[in-house]
Length: 303
Image (cartoon, rainbow, N blue to C red; front, side, top):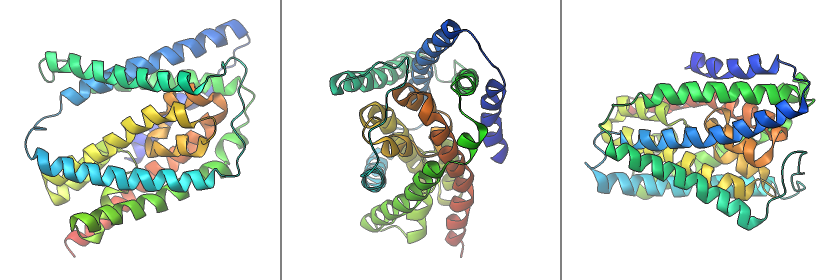
């Protein structure tokens, strides 16, 4: 799992090593990055359609996922909003057009519709007929490489990227508020405390939570953990453009660990290259903590 995190960082590091002197090339690269976001979202939708056995145990899954998602994301948003209460609105960057609330809402809706369209396409295909996971990973790696180039040519220093107090605050706030939400949802559903904490400690890393929880608590709970973190990612995709300007911590933090990878393009598109180091560092911290915390809480299942 640590290897996966380091593999995600590699294209960013490689891209950061490339200096581009042409402003026209940088603008085209920014446009290409923006368009690749839609490709990744479409592939995500197709991948959703390929999930097995979603129809079984639907009532329990819906109840568990809905309650955990509402409690965890709700606590995250309240805590991150409180953290943002004295932070000035995010400043517009050169090359980024100022967007009204309607324009940001339209952008969020467009992203959500791309996922829905991908899901519809996936339903028409035979399950597993396309290597969606492989394509998504390659597209993501290429996109992170482009973002790394933009980071290098935006004037950011390595110190600004690696030592980021804002990112540390976001990560710490997200961990604590996720635990509060997980304990609340678990209490309402009658689950043991460690299950509530385990389901709230993947921080959006749905492939991790599905595997770890499913291995310890069974396939139903594994599916619930997977869908809970998937809902976080989809909700983040919709809300990031709406929240970014006035509530940047909430926009970055809501994606949790996925701020390092799958929601990073959306964060960059909404807030510009200035918020990428914050997203990368917070996502990196949460990605490292996720497996350790989940395995720690799940160990109480046999205790």
